[in-house]
Image (cartoon, rainbow, N blue to C red; front, side):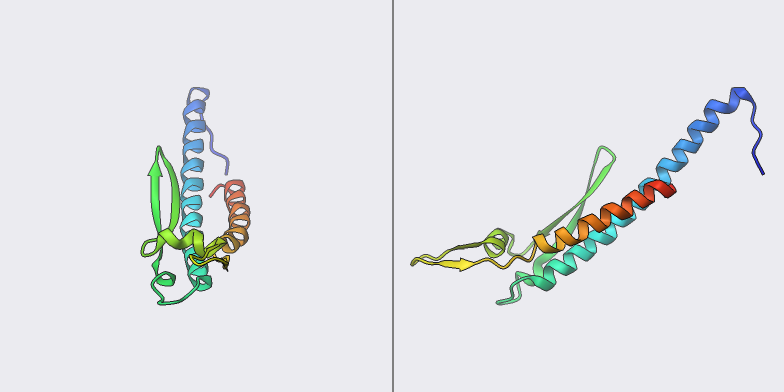
Length: 127
């Protein structure tokens, strides 16, 4: 049944409805970011080169909040300084080149478009 309100209450009712919508959408997006960042960490680790296993097991994520915005950083806590060398390849000391093994970008390229579609759906359905 429709809710009846007085004209002088209309502004408050609109503000409350928008606040509720915003909170629901924010919670939905936070949940999606949390799940997708977990999935990306797993996929990156699964595709990582494995010599001693230290690099492969070092993948982690960190939640950042700034000005009400939430984001996640995915990084390698054990051997982060070699991630770009393994991803793109590098020159050898005595000459020649070690080819890269793309293991970071492919999961990102697969996961982010899916996440964006899910976030759009969250916004459209209001949470």
